Amino acid sequence: MTTIANGSVVAFDYTLRDGAGAVIDSSQGGSPMVYLHGHGNIVAGLEVALQGKTAGANLKVTVKPEDGYGEWREELVMKVARGRLPKSPEPSVGLELQGVGPGGEPLHLRVIAIEGDQVSLDANHPLAGQELHFDVSIQTVRAASEEELAHGHVHGHGGAHH
Image 1 (cartoon, one colour):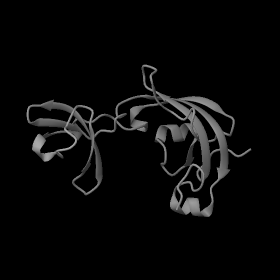
Image 2 (spheres, helix red, strand yellow):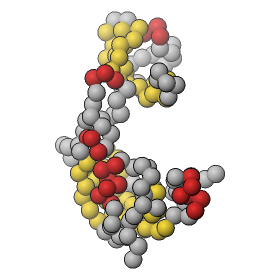
Image 3 (cartoon, helix red, strand yellow):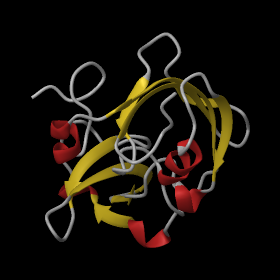
Image 4 (cartoon, helix red, strand yellow):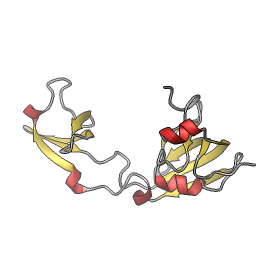
């Protein structure tokens, strides 16, 4: 039986819960998550926990913030004048926007407060600072193709098509 190692293509079903037990995301009712192990395609803490497991394994994994989406960082919250934001849609708390960072990298921003003409934007990942609780059921494990290894991701069903 093939065990999960660097260069394995892994398909697994999962349910992700927050610290209070609320479901954040799940593959139930859909397709399993498929990824190339050892290439940073899933959060590091989950990838480490899956190392050495085989198809058919069921496990519960708790991922600390530093091994998931990182700690929540105050310096990633900024205030901007409402006039600097797009006119449509109208800014509202919870609105998600795309921006560009100082190095030209894409930024995912969420409106977290509006005070007069000032809008507070948070560039932290929505799950930053949270402990993640995964219930995982490993479906299949196979060796990656040369092309998948060269590209750093899975091709075909559940992966990239190019």
